[in-house]
Image (cartoon, rainbow, N blue to C red; front, side, top):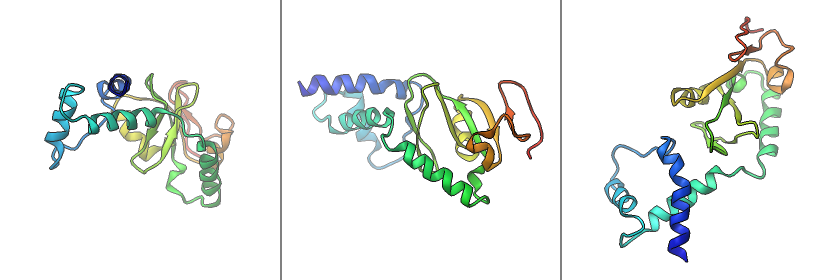
Length: 166
């Protein structure tokens, strides 16, 4: 039963590997052994690393149950500290099959039901480079609070509307 569950987990996690969303270091003392275990899974002598990798990737795709509270606290902090560099925000269209992302700044962000995700422009640059579609960007805290279309600084990549940031 355990081997079957491990195989099923690995099949579901393969989407992330195949789409290039799982990154490994180019060199590491443990890399050769790890790659060998993945290559021979599930028929190898050892499968702990492969199975734990599949479990992590499955867990990572699931939305975090407290994410709305965490995002609310981040929003409050942005309003309290307007000099915050995260005021430069971007909305991206996530490729199918993504429930959440871990950004380079260390944030775990859930993908919305509409398949979009908002993050700092600094974090977004890596996803845009990997082929994610940028839908909009904005620069003020008021826009991040939901006043995007009524604010003169709102820019939509999809609608082709560009105006100066205000």
